[in-house]
Image 1 (cartoon, helix red, strand yellow):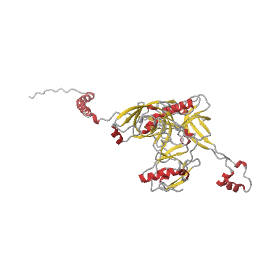
Image 2 (cartoon, rainbow, N blue to C red):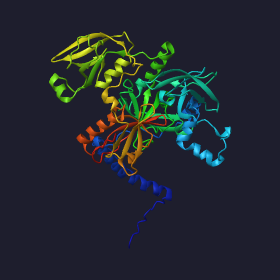
Image 3 (cartoon, rainbow, N blue to C red):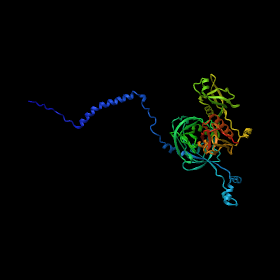
Image 4 (tube, helix red, strand yellow):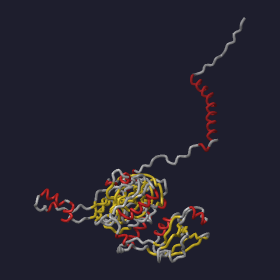
Length: 504
């Protein structure tokens, strides 16, 4: 007889069955997660770096607060009315006669020439109307006008101009203007965000942004602005931005936008601003003295190369090598000798020759300076009292025979351009080969040539000699032109295509 043994089977709800399944799976999941964590901890070098930027900045508040402090600046250069001789020589007289026959030209058609205008930007320094801009924006202007963000236009008085620093101080009769907040340009670092507000091509209140890409730059126009340690950025700057402010992310002005590096005449990725600390010093001197006074040592220097640094036992190439003296200057009467290397001034290290000019130019005349000098194997200190920077002679010297024979026109076939002497003695670009290197680089007829390969240009013949030498030594390499166009200084880099040709 078979005995049946009852079997008890518990009833399990669906919810409890799911919990049991999860309970069995969790340990396995924990093991996998633990293995992944151990692998990550054991390979710290392969871990991605912590992100420094969590998102792109929003400059809305900065612009809303500071745009009312940015103004448009226009320099007007008046021209005389067209004389009868000018009209006849230009063909205007014949054109008038074609309209009116033999009758006299009506008075209403005898109009003066239109005045020339330079447009730029500026920014309000004080509520009572002091405004900063670039000197080249108002160069040769008989009248200067300022237009504020709310549409008011006022004539401005020029309180002072520092052509070397390219800074001008203006004053308008107004009250309760919104001034900018000034920052400290010594705190600026490469990689920081920057914002420009200005009037490129006449478009007022235009905002552009970018990052600081370099500090203490010396430009090829050093002969004109040797004392300015430019701030370099990739903030888009175009004609009309000159004189406008460059802001940091806190809405403080850290510089005045002044120049661009370009091959086309427009923004090409690099722009330069004058540091605001330098600007404040210049403006303070203009208010106090009506001019800018700079210290002068009177020494000719160049940067130290690797061979000289090794010979002197320097750990790296730095300093300014003395190569000559200005007669009767403080340097000529000091203990300095040709071949000495100036390593620092009052404890400020000199990294290259241009740094010495900037440091000394920031000091007033009669300043006592302490020079750290490397001479042979020894390092000594020399104390010198600076004099005032000599003023440019007012009267032009008598021209030499070479200057009398200087050509008024030269043809540079290798670049496809003609250089001519302008009405005021400047050198300007004349005709261009439309398929030549000069035209392809963005140079235009009428551009004033300021420098070529960092050499200041004062005559077409001088430009020819420099270009001939460069073509002989460089072949088809690029040559750097700095020109002035519409109140803006711009860089262009055409390439040689043969040998220069001179035409008297």
